[in-house]
Image (cartoon, rainbow, N blue to C red; front, side, top):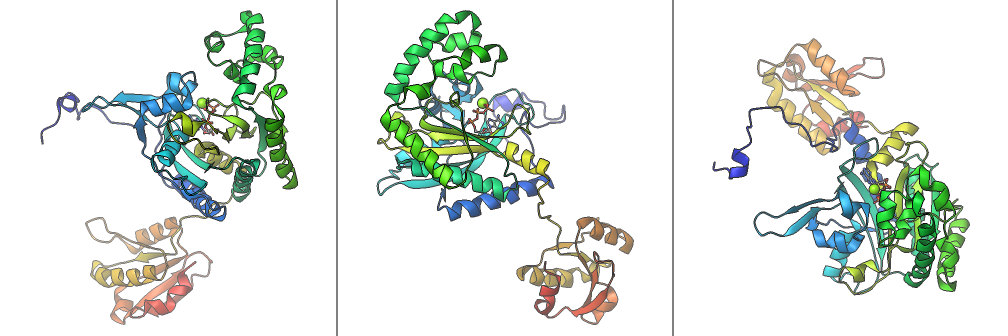
Amino acid sequence: MQLPPMHQAIDVMAEKLSAVKGMNDILPPDSARWEWLEDKVRALMARYAYRNVRTPIVEPTALFVRGLGEVTDIVEKEMYSFEDRLNGEQLTLRPENTAGLVRAVAEHSMLYDGGKRLYYMGPMFRHERPQRGRYRQFHQIGAEALGFAGPEVDAELILLADALWKELGIGDVRLEINSLGQPPERQQHRTELIAYLEKHADLLDEDARRRLHRNPLRILDTKNPAMQAMVDGAPRLIDYLGAQSLAHFEGLQAMLRANGIEYRINPRLVRGLDYYNLSVFEFITDSLGSQGTICAGGRYDYLIEQIGGKPAPAVGWALGIERVLELVKERGTHIPTLAPDAYAVIPDAQALPLALTTLQTLRAAGVSVQMHAGSGEGMGSMKSQFKKADASGARHALIFGADEVAQGMVTVKSLRDGSGTQVLRPLANALAWAAEIRS
Ligand code: ATP
Ligand code: MG
């Protein structure tokens, strides 16, 4: 095979290859927790009538620059961007999925017949310093409602997230909300915020100084403890909201209260991305150290237009799967195990064709069966096969011994209830006894 020059330069024999820093393999048994979560999310989204969307992992870089805003952490320093070697296109591994989803909605005129409720799950990429709850490839689940302007969909999305926490057994996360108002209100606030920050220029760190005239709102979001007190005294956006913005915010709150959703208004809550307006919210836990935000979202009524679509209101959230699962683990939520119902013990290779046929029948009837497989030098001793049967967690062993197979039978032995009960079952109609061993 002819390899392109770049690949020839790599000495493939030299060293052991490992995953890229900050990017994780998700392996059994942990992957069971991921599948469990994904199943719960699919079922829940269906109950709220949100439909699945899958957009490409690679998008034009311009989508994120235009969509997220140039003066954001993501666009300034976190994107995996590269040039397509064949045609020079500027491309980026998606750092988030809202911009891609909105691009798809606009590209396919999905709102032509009314609003849409959509969700996605998948990997995102940000070049950050890896630490607990912060990775370079991480995974998000997001829910987005497009084409609806009223606060009822903001409320619906928050209720959906809240229902998910309950499903996952992590009901004790707290909700913070705020309103960023509309652009003219932000404009007025911005002028006074800049004046205030200029007065305290000596306290601004390097990031803040750079953002002062380009994106001063983001300074309120600082994690620098030395700036906290100064930032606490800054003009609050919420005090600049007009009647309509306030009505939207109060409408949302009334619906949350009516549904028993506790929340706190955090006037300093702004989102890291430029595209938000009106409602913003975060679900936060104290159990994960400084990576405590598990889900964040808000309204982004101007994004579709910004990336070239027909104007339409929109609201959504994204949760970090790694952080949510960390919390699930911490809370000790019970995850159904992946133990098979039965383990097939096959002492002699001669029984294999018949054993395989029986197992196929059982599996078609919904029984999960792990087949013992040999080493290449025979099937292994009964003792070692039973050891593997035990380790598999199966509740039954199916023993395809020469004697019983000769009689057209298989022994079903109970492994978990301590009784060690053994019964003979006919091979010919496995369907008849499948239910006995199916969990
Ligand atoms: P943070 O302030 O923690 O950097 P963010 O504001 O950048 O978060 P969003 O872009 O709003 O995060 O993404 C929504 C959610 O995705 C976050 O609340 C978090 O749970 C998760 N998330 C974001 N970045 C990462 C990452 N690098 N690794 C793991 N999860 C992440
Ligand atoms: Mg971030």
